[in-house]
Structure formats: structure tokens, C-alpha cells
Image (cartoon, rainbow, N blue to C red; front, side, top):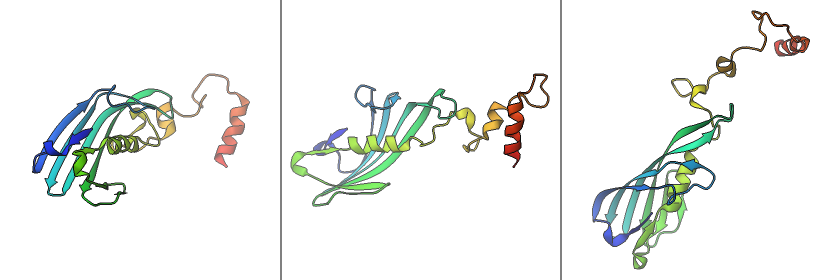
Length: 167
């Protein structure tokens, strides 16, 4: 994800790049090919890079331990400017532009953006409502084991647990 400054056209330009699993590897996660859409805006002494990255990452559900593909996507802005000092926040970064090297590198920002797009709580899509909110645990797995309607013999320990639950 290195680009030659001399090959970037003046003013605005767009470039779409795909990276295979081998070229772009998130060490802890299995994923599909990575698609990267980059908007460049090159002005004298400044290059603005605005990118959007997408891939499918294989995650393990925290609730059921089932694996599922999570559509990860992230966007970020980087301003490469001559004489700038490194600064960054959650939406953009400012990096020094070294014209003599004739190269800008966005690989760290792309990788970090993807890693930050992975949810902390990894839930299989069947545990999510249409609006993306989490479903109740019992709504997916059913009510308590050996419910009142069942003909099975109820373990007396369940009654003690039900009393604790109702308190």
C-alpha cells in the first residue's frame, strides 16, 4: 500500500486496489481479499488520502462459538504535508510528506482501521435483530430448561435456582 507521489495525478483522483490474503494478512484473523478504494487530492506540498477498506473476516461468536463471516469496513483520512508533525485521532492522521523519497505508505492505517472495525462483542447474526441490536439470550435458545409444559422429570435443583431468579 505504498504509492509513488510522482504517479499520483494533480488535484483529485480515485484508485481502487484489491489485495489477496497473502499480501494483506491480519495475523489473528482469517479473512477474504481486501478491497481498497482510495481518493487522492494532490496539491503542492500536500497529499490528502481518503480511503475506504472492505473485507469479510471470519469471527467466532462469543455466545455460541459458531464461526461467521463479518463484513468489516472502515474509512480514514490521512493528510501528508511537508513539514508536518505526526498527529492522529480516530478519524484522521497528519503525516510528514517526504518528497525526496517519492513515496507515501498507508498500510499501517489501513490495517489499524480494519482491526478497529471488528466488534468487541462478536455475535453471530442470528443473535441480532433487524435493527442490529442484540436479541435476548432466551429468545434464541428458548426459555428455561424443563419448562412447566414438559413431561420430563424436573431436577429439584432447578426449583432452587428459580427461587433465586425471582428474588
